[in-house]
Length: 244
Image 1 (cartoon, rainbow, N blue to C red):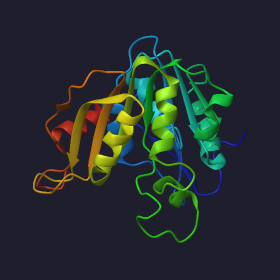
Image 2: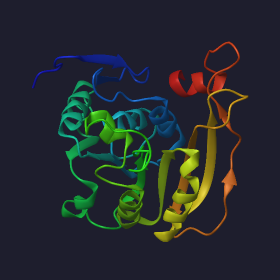
Image 3: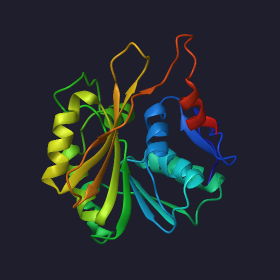
């Protein structure tokens, strides 16, 4: 297996000497994935399942930050799965992370229901009525609900999770009503929400959500997370998320 292919590079993740392979012409991971990997919690011996893993950034970072026993990660794009597998190999994490080329709609061909402790997802944000799509390339698939939508992801998540299992997702605030309604439709109770603002004087452009399968109704809103200070540098909290 070749380590790098045309247009690919290796990026340092600043965690446990882990690295990741990315292709500048495809969809590279952003701060949303990094924030989700920090927001999501997994206990010792937990089994974690990442939906729409892209190049595997969330399971690799969570491997460094948690004591979870095993990570499964799926993606519908074969090229992304190939890069993710090579990144797992570079980090010698084959015994911890398994990457699969799999459509979420067919997930129960390979996985049993009620077997996962934690599910994570950084899904496509835009529904098919939002934003312009020139072609169904890698970036379009990652950003738009072309091959799966919010309902597909939440339904599968609910069936995968054990009772009281947790689902962590990052999304856009303008979809929050849809998100909460869909979560409750599939018995996933929103428990914690944190909005992310690019600057202190700007409105939030991301939202982090924790929900619990069959959980009781009680929602906690955390203080907003600010990404940049007035000098256009990362705030202290963002620096800790990236580097501590």
